[in-house]
Length: 112
Image 1 (cartoon, rainbow, N blue to C red):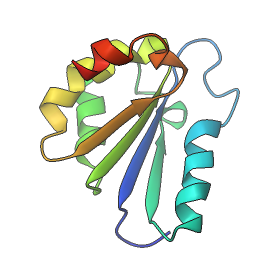
Image 2 (cartoon, rainbow, N blue to C red):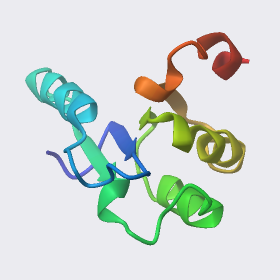
Image 3 (cartoon, one colour):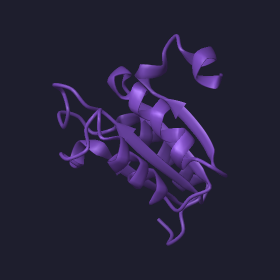
């Protein structure tokens, strides 16, 4: 990965299975970005025990620390309220893509 990432990804997984599996979706996307020569970073919240579904200020700080113009957030349903609350505070000037199993059936509401 290069020094300056073009894409900053965040894997948000809380709950009882936290830490049980690597963030496969973002890692697969990262592999595709590598093949295209696009620099990326990944912040896996499973590796941040202080960050939980109610850690708004900590999550906003994590997002603001991503030095990339494009963000990709992979979420499970328990992380959606945190994402919805944090993005208006942190995402100015960024292109943000939200995906993952927590977004199923919610695409229109998330776009609004």
